Length: 168
Image 1 (tube, rainbow, N blue to C red):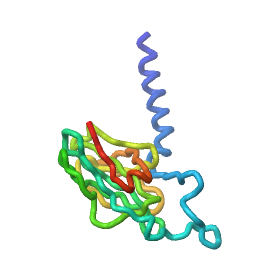
Image 2: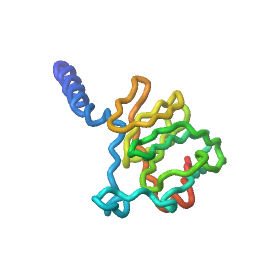
Image 3: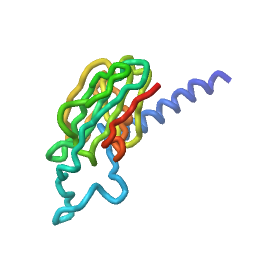
Image 4: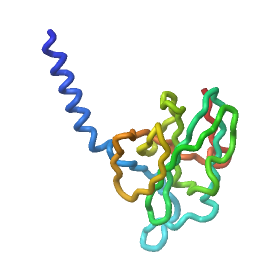
């Protein structure tokens, strides 16, 4: 009877290792249905118009301090991951100075110990719950030993206009 427990543990570890290569990449955002906008000649996406930029606003209605990370496309097709922007309970405001690309922006939030998180399934990125990070990557990125992969949520039209509200 006890012999099946080690065998089960080995099988679970093997399955986890088999799935690891798919999970180690920085992110693999999927385009929204219908594409990301009009195409330029030659089929390449047209550069974003000024109307495709927005100010990312956050309102923390939770009873605990929350920290926000952002994942967005930058010039040249690379992706930038930035964290953390702190929001005390009851605080609302922009997460950063400047604007972000509306069609290629994702967010994630958690409390300081990483026990409470607001994650999504639209893109995946590596974060460090214990320290700040700011990296630009083109291609795959493997998480550092002090990082973990989390799911980011793609900004939607309403949230781009009004901001996001985080609650308990």
